[in-house]
Length: 486
Image 1: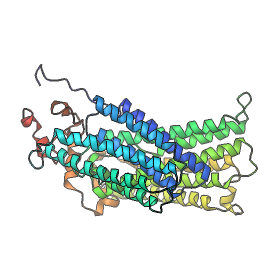
Image 2: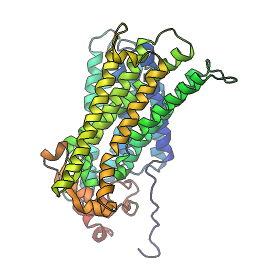
Image 3: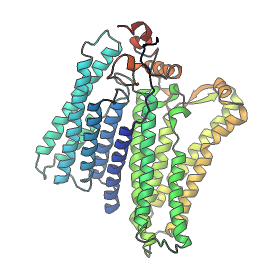
Image 4: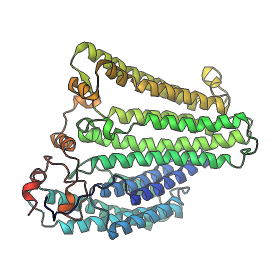
């Protein structure tokens, strides 16, 4: 551009407002975790409330990765959403037939109304539409669709709030509200792919951090700070180390997976399963944190026997977390060489990883389901808190070492990543039997060519999300330079 052209400053994938929303969301998750800790299990109200809180975060993330959120109105909306979410989390202990449940319905209705207003504004800015397939027309269609779905959600929650507390329809209201929030990835317009990946990673890491802080908080009344014993040191070390191992198992797929091989940009069904896997990961990480809190209390309070609830939540939560991470990774497409000998080496590495994950998942699930009076090898692994944590840390360490097998093969065969990408071209994975979707693949290719945002020149409303994909499925993006003066 010329001397008078506006300076384009790349926007951070996660803004400070987004980070504050993430902290409030994780606080809501931990409130659900406290309810799990008190009940010792997951029931339908807990599952429904967690899903509502996650979908509220997903709505905010979906908007912020598509549109500019630096204006005052967007900051105000985020602030109101944070207040509402924090207020709703205080009722996470309630069942379906209580005033607390009604308050959570009110929170969901309020957030849905905010998004009706936000997307009505988007529609107003782009009501002229434009040619079919253009950015303006796609944005308009997206705004209309989201506004309609959120309006239906407002009606649904209003009906639920009007029902008496003893009504048998209240659980069905939650089910219908959750279904209204389900979205197929990229139905009308893309989001900022890398920002969305970063947001998911930040939310997960914050949840792990809150779990660690909660463990220390539970330990504080019982921990001997003046003269701690080696057992106390060992317990807190193993708890922290277990969460750190889970963090290592969780691979940030923003740059480790090529965009055209990412589940979200390969097939919409794969993308939908990818979102379900992320929801499952957050849910069972919360369950694991609740179990570790109970385990910490029982150990430092010198309980005579390992509580059943603590054992079930820790072992079951760990098993489900490992499975969720493996499930998320399996949604992506992997690449193997055409060379038969090299291909066999990669396939052996991948199937070894699968076998290891399934073995750990099955063993820890059996540890969760083991009765109090059971005997045998698995019972020996859970004689006390430190021994059980040490076993889980050992399993996590083995999985991490196995997860590096394919990288070890790659380093052995090729000198660098560029050479590896030239030979590893044959797709391999669960979704290779399904045809990839051409619009998503075009978007993925555009991501590799141009990650710089050019939206600030077109509209103060759209963010760096839509028009950074030169050559993607939208004709107007491909011809951005030609249409810049329109």
